[in-house]
Image (cartoon, rainbow, N blue to C red; front, side):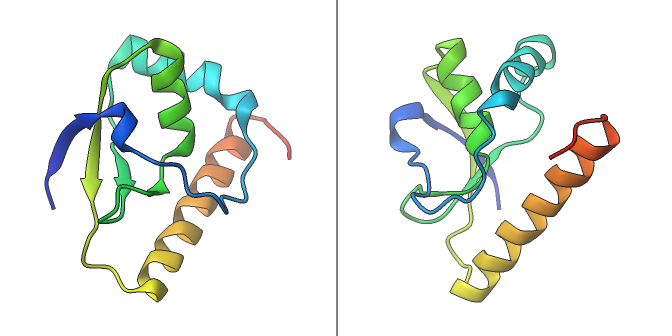
Amino acid sequence: MEIQMVEIGKVKPYENNPRKNDDAVDEVAKSIEAFGFKNPIIVDKDYVIIAGHTRLKASEKLGLTHVPVIVAEDLTKDERDSLEILEHRRWNAYMRSEGYVY
């Protein structure tokens, strides 16, 4: 898989994303502004987000016109679901390590 720069409008949020984490957008935007994009958004072949909703929102807040994505077009439905679960667990672990409680 390779990282591609795509127009931000091409990337679509997954409509059933269970996470409501608008509180994290400002912190992620600050991180992107300070360090650049270190973790691309992962999308499926239709450019629907598998992992990276907060990064997309932060990018929109910063007024970015392009974002880095990895297109995971070869995933089965089960693999996609597994990747989403792993990404959510990683994020939750990070938030706990930073002292946030949800």
